[in-house]
Length: 326
Image (cartoon, rainbow, N blue to C red; front, side, top):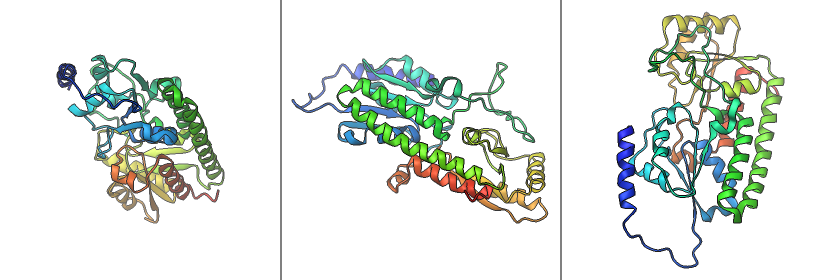
């Protein structure tokens, strides 16, 4: 991958010597913004809404590829090199970005690493009780746990990061800086209202614990509201098959806490949840699904999916799992 990135960007620099068609006089140059993950794309879209005709937003992962599986194409690397503003998460799944950035880019390009912007609010992936460590990670050096890159699954983080994005966009496009700040402020009101809705839901809940029969990218969301959790796999583990010991532990926990619902994430076929059910004595639990926004498609967006709508759906799923009347 590293050699491919260097080769592609070298070809790009050569191609840059070729003549290009000049822009029509008087035509305002569009601001070019590139984002990797859907949440960042949607945040930028909200911030530039009043000036959208003058902003081109490229969302690299719009095909629906999982964040953890994505590899950039040649066209992606060209787009990254030529943009005015680049917004990426900065986690392990985007380690390829380091080499892409090292090859340079458009003069004056602003690069926003969202995890760096959060600083010490970034959490580390943590081992979960009853779950075996993921041995598929290739770590030659001793290394406790990777940083948890699912930072967008916190409405509190979303407030901070949209504030940062509005400021960065205004720096590059000062003529519309005030518009970006005002749009972010309006959007922040919606984020904070939803955050309050989560707090109200948890306060009115019968239970304080959830159980995921799946991967677990939701630590930020759970920690924001003090929700206890168990899961089959820590973080977004490369493991796909739960061990007998993990299934037994989840079934015992589900039954011991008398939880009314098990949770899965988007794209799950529910087979592990059913296996856990089958190892309890009553098999009476319901199933609900949370959306981690890791593999969103352009079609879903065209059908109306937004960051806020997904987080609102997650609120309803958690209310079901916690039996909340709030």
